[in-house]
Amino acid sequence: MSLDAPSFDSQLDAAGLRIGIVVARFNADITERLLEGAQAALMAHGAAGDDIRMVRVPGALEIPAVAARMAETGFDAIVCLGCVIRGGTAHFDHVCRVAMDGIGRVAELARAGVGNGVLTVDTREQALERVGGAHGHKGEEAALTAVEMAHLLRAFDVTDRTG
Image (cartoon, rainbow, N blue to C red; front, side, top):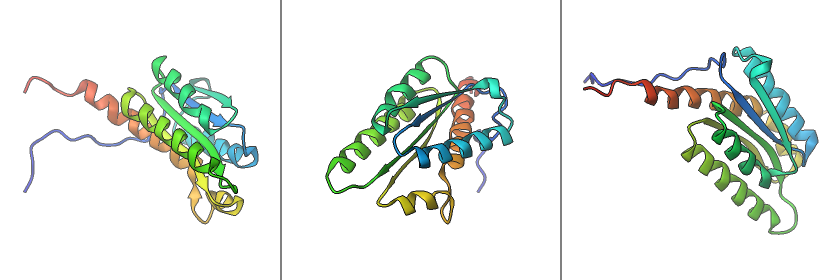
């Protein structure tokens, strides 16, 4: 059965989008690789260097605050990058929960597409597998998710509301 309802097709064209990247400095050896992958993916999909703004924050806890401010100030797409590696205390669980909940709130409430590239892993080896290793490149994936969601959210602004 076919529906005659409008549909929203995703796009990965970053050209003309105002894109913000928030990257944590903590675990910089991993987050810099996430950043490199995100920037490469954005450029490969048409983003202009002048349309990308990057902000470094101390750690994953600070990502949601800057992402929310970017959304408030008109960014079309926001890429959140960080890495939290489990230690011997409950701190890992608290940091992950707060960071993920905050990024989720921004994604839910903002008019911007949000890509979550915050790794929450047990070991440094698992993190390395996610920055170009066996599990792909989560920086690239987060960047392309933000672009795709920016286009999907924009589609709601231009759909025909007369019918």
